[in-house]
Image 1: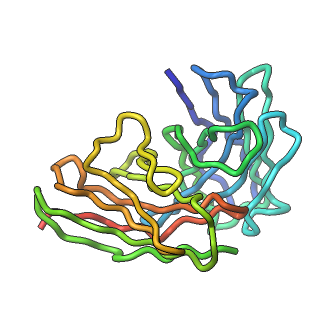
Image 2 (image 1 turned 45 degrees about the vertical axis):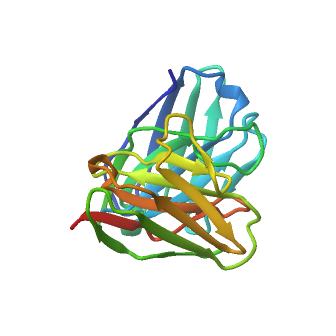
Amino acid sequence: EVQLVTSGGGLVQRGGSLRLSCAASGFTFSKYVMNWVRQAPGKGLEWVSTIHGSGGATFYADSVKGRFTISRDNSKNTLYLQLNSLRAADTAVYYCAKGTSSWDTDRFDYWGQGTLVTVSS
Amino acid sequence: DIQMTQSPSTLSASVGDRVTITCRASQSISSWLAWYQQKPGKAPTLLIYKVSTLESGVPSRFSGSRSGTEFTLTISSLQPDDFATYYCQQYDSYPYTFGQGTKLEIK
């Protein structure tokens, strides 16, 4: 059974940093693209970032480029998102989501439970 | 960026109704369109991908179709479990984009 367990959220001051983690199990982690998607309170879904299975390619939304860094440790079956220079607009539930290929643009077939990041001003 | 315009934003319907949600892409996305269902306080779940392919375990009352850059999610006979918010997503190119969502409410 595929499981994605997200952690690391919390309350942080504007300009602060946080690292989110997504522990994966039930599939061969290194073979799949992984993603982060966020949802501000009461709002819709926003794609944040994607990393290829090898970790060799990463992609970011313009709204987070230069501030967030996606990474993965395939030996630990864990996906990360480093959030720096946080803004009030980054307040959201952050979901990790699994793709269905190792490198191609892709749908999200499994999602973690989400972790809430709150940026206070 | 590809914009996904989803309508309506809210839909009131009754159990047994047939409902349709539409998503229009601002440019061609071929068939790279997915639909997700989200219930309050939960993560989204994948319903349909590649316009019309049902994800494993999704009831057959859900279906998807395409006409050019307009995509449709249809629920043939609403069940109580279907009242939720639905999102379309294009995965043709980065940045991936979602529709604004359609909240399906009980009439």
